[in-house]
Length: 238
Image 1 (cartoon, rainbow, N blue to C red):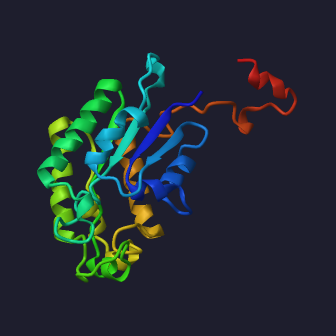
Image 2: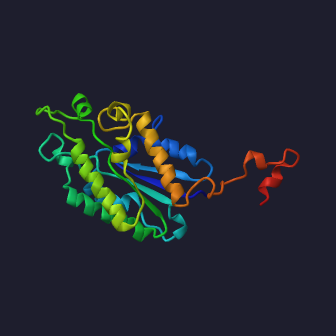
């Protein structure tokens, strides 16, 4: 009954439906107009994402099943350093770029009219990563660095430019705020409520620029303001 927006990504997407999460905020923003569908996979990189595309987005003969938009938010795990404790998640930046192109091509082939919105990995607070390790870290060195994340962010922006799709450069945007390391990242990588606010504001803005906004989308059923108290059922006759 309602069109859909898919959120496809790693843990930053998976946990986005939590309290104050950008996914939950997007669902609230588009309530009564769009169903926001979560497809987040903690720990995944683009190499793994390519393996599950058919399962995550099964084919359909009905073109009306095409979503309005898909956000593609990968790179934080690809950018793990190859000689640190999370090396098994590392994907070289050139492969990451090609993988993103492949994901975009898959989605565009399946749904030619769907808006594909790329989101770069966020910046990294290396102190936060040392204070909140995810696995045993005998080297006592951060498994991610902000410099490495920046390289993957540049690759993501390049894919958007080369494929003609919109992009949110979260790595650059977030670092424009004072004290972003602690104010926007709770563990050096994942988002605080303030960090989630940056993402939702950018997503809403980018979608609006692509013609997807509350003003352009109809509500699914009559609003209470359109129901005549003297003849309530009249609103449902159309």
